[in-house]
Length: 99
Image 1 (tube, rainbow, N blue to C red):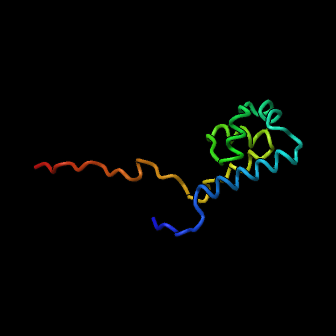
Image 2 (image 1 turned 90 degrees about the horizontal axis):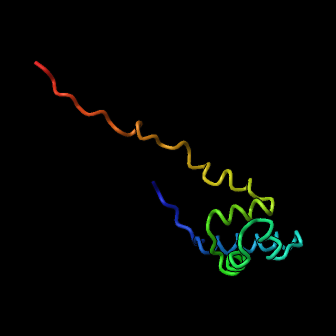
Image 3 (image 1 turned 120 degrees about the vertical axis):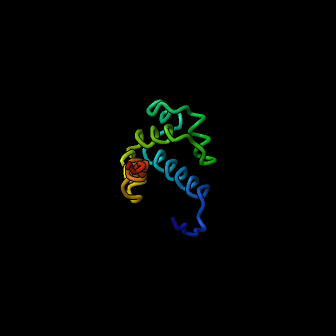
């Protein structure tokens, strides 16, 4: 697989996602405390996410659901094509000829 050189790194993307989530929270007129109650994600986790971009996947999905953006994750890896099945890449063992 060829890798594409990019100047954007995962930390930049995480920070942009965190900023967008914060903007969405504020647009919904939600405090961190009220978003925590709505999502089930602790307020401290939300604060850490908004300031550093660091968050666990399940917490991020819970926040996305609470903010009405969960569907945005459905196609995240869709462009990668069909998954490879093990039976498609494993070759059957050779059998010795008889006789």
